[in-house]
Length: 394
Image (tube, rainbow, N blue to C red; front, side, top):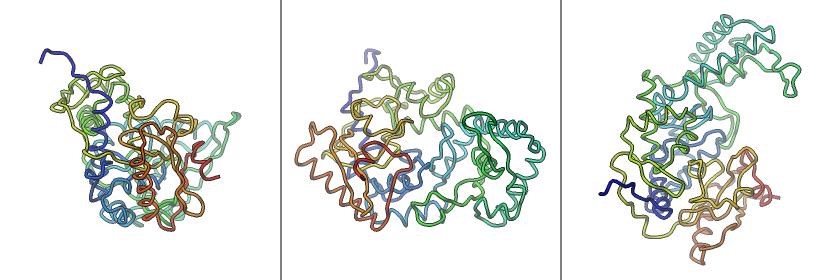
């Protein structure tokens, strides 16, 4: 070695993605826990995303719903909770302490302070009153096991208290104590999302007490989380890491140093891999196809996406807030999008047909059949709708 950073090109980055994100056929997993561990986190803002992301990567897609239900609500080996960038994710349960210490605590402090300040401006009760309500609500949740906000308010009526928010401004509104407090408790790692009201596609849910976990120090937890993500998604730039974690750049650099990350050269500049991961990686023998859902962790995994998603495709596949819609992949890159119509049909369209030959179109069609098969009568509409998804379902 001459000391220069090894160049990692687009082809190798796509190869790493295919294998480590369990997308190529031979790399698919046997259980939702295996998928979540490989990806570190599944986006959980839209409940259906979790199931669709798992189903795209399971060897036996027909087991997607019962196996994911088991992991989330029976074994509790997966937990849906707030994480990076104040976003709801699904994590492997052993990782909850790491996420809480590395990311949740700082966000939680700001959220609680903001809630107390908003209540004070509205003339609502103070922080001491809020603490009493919190303790009472948590005790009620412990007795019930799982409960909706309305059910908790039956035990603790003060949760129904309302207060004005942002009076006099264009976004003025009225909040209930339960809505804001449960959100804060979620970020603080005291409660998590429980079983939905209805099917797995439902956006209404119950709350449950968060699983007990040890308290970890900030620097150690940040190093652990960044190392896990970099092992799954590396190489990645400092900007990618800052965007995914939501941390300050100083935190990112400290964590990189703590894990002994190795620099490599990427088209967009210097990237990093975990120690021992700088050698070339060969991709799968056969090209692969995949249908990934809106907010899938692979499509959303990096801030810089040109190496797998052509810039000209973004206006059709993203909403105005930067949320990706359902995507069609062929051999490591996004080539189009898909949607489910009201009659259950899976509609899809190629937006970038270059390099998608008959084999590619046949492989994509097979994935469409695979998805349609395990969805059955379920109907899925993304929470954040994109231009192409709306067009395909019109």
